[in-house]
Length: 541
Image (cartoon, rainbow, N blue to C red; front, side, top):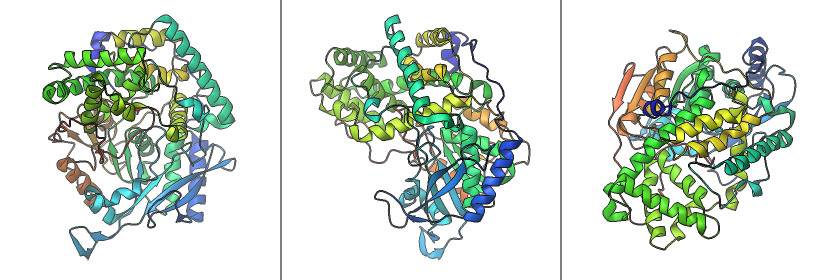
């Protein structure tokens, strides 16, 4: 995840100080055999679908599938993954009398790591998804570690939301020492609360779980759609099980280069968020007549800084400080449709009305358990997947350099990932993702050119590594997650591929979606334009 201009300004971001682990059977013979054993077992057992928890539609049914905690020991400890399914309607949305042939199951992974797609099957009622829902059973699941699938935890949920909090873009030494202590305590909490199986919550096992899920569904080959981090799971699956792929859509692609997983990946992401922060401020400046926050991006930045300073001195409602403000505006870097609500809340706060900002930014006790679980899974997977620098001086050097040109998200991103410097579980060796000509059917990659969460270079790299893949680009757009949203051109390619197996060639482009219209009142969007909404402090790989 990269913004090249910022990196040339920041200097080379070296990776000296990485802890290089011993190779640990990451994708060896034992794991391949264990996956085959678990898949055969799941195929024989099938799935016993029943009512779903919570208030799910009656037509959506849920089940569990057993997978090995450690694929090198398929007869050892098992964990259960919860899955959900909505059967294909088999009715043409344009002509209800016409029956549509069923094409099997479409399994969706929403990313994170740490996000669940258990509610994904309900997307079939959305107009943009009705044609796909007519031909496919829509299948969601909670990946390993995500509630209720053998959930992980690193601290008490009631302690997870620390508010109000600070968000210095150039932290002093005392603040750094405080964050180091917190990162060490968090890593220690993950080990203590999750036990000896912590190392098995990783991306390679997430890909293996997919193959067991495929077998349990009775599918000879997998039809899969992954968003954000889900693209990495899909790319690993295509590399590990190329003959098991039927069709695969990878939306908002993570760069699969093993050298980037995950330390450099997050530096690239921080650089890219600076560009999106500029996009947002430019849009706000164009609508100064609505918001009154400044007629230039620099003036909008000054308005934001004024609000952050005021919140540091006097947190809004005792809960919203600079950290909560930064997190709330980070979401504007993910999704254009958040721009109006954020701008309106900032304008209202600076005029003396803090209620809209508190409504958007204050932590919610009701979501604390879900958010803590998501954060635990995110941390475990990224820390387990690859080596990280274990010397804080490396982090300090690289993030200090980058923050000179990309201050908005750099240090906040570093603090979120810093527990990986003090991680006690064994690390994996990242897989060299790639497929050769004819090894898999063609894969469809979707990407927005200005996506910050998964910068566009990652989509180009994935396109190079997956032989025969097609990249469809939403030009001059930055919303994270483009398939099934408001862009009709993108959706036409998605439908043609999933329904007919047709692709436009190696590269294709679509014009951008319309910019959001300014709203003077801070109303959250009802339809958010993408499937993936991370609960991880706005963070997505």
